[in-house]
Image 1: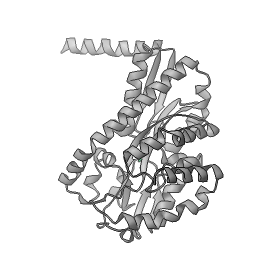
Image 2: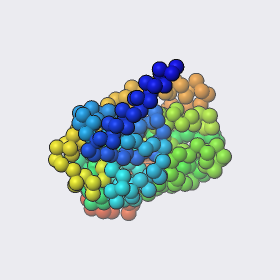
Image 3: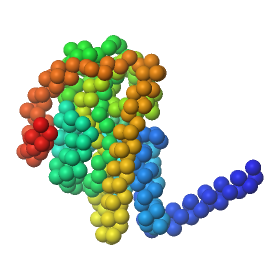
Image 4: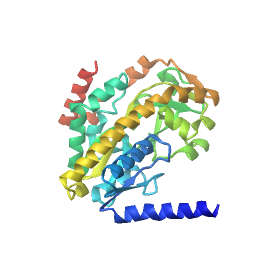
Length: 325
Ligand code: EAX
């Protein structure tokens, strides 16, 4: 026992020594807890970057919103107080509207289409645009396709959503989606377990991993496989900080994050079938074949709203709609 404590002490001291001697220290902020999709990507990034730089670059992960909520961390990144983060794309849209294209309802049929667009020219346009507002966009990892859960009643078609108080991300587009569907959308930062438990909100929408990791099966009886939005993460650095780095280090970071993002997407997708089984076993009543056409019809007009009036945003949306037909 004593030996083990001594060994642990040595390991901690070594770990500190490594990061203390690191030339570049990177604080990476997350709002999610360990085991979450964002954390899987961040952990892989840390591992790859520290290994490849021989510890010259070190990453400290601040999870569970210990640095603040989504919007607050993005502001810290703009100021260069925090260097990096992995975050769901939704809350970016109050900083720049172009991210609404990737969160547009029912735009991607499947994972392959999402990869093709986000790893291709449209994805590069989105990452580049982020520089206007102080972010260096590096890669896309993912949350996955979002599904609706609620504690009131089964939802099969869009009309069943009417009047449900649904928590949405702090995103103008996501609020508009649920308004169009006839729900009563309430924007809130993450996490939201207590609000669901206390009935402040009736439901929420998120991919399967979230419903599992955050144990929503304890407090939400009904799930509907709406897959209404493909929810990516945008993995970013502070542009202010990025410009202080040598090209060689930028390259190390860019490559490590691209690889971590690819790893995380595969990891996330590989787990989905088992997650669905688990949620069923936990007693959730799951509607596997909702009337998606009805959901689509109610949200089809969103592209004509002011949300998409910026010409660059509108033209990228049209391009992606064409490319995913
Ligand atoms: O990434 O806020 C949200 O609904 C996100 O999807 C959640 O933090 C998991």
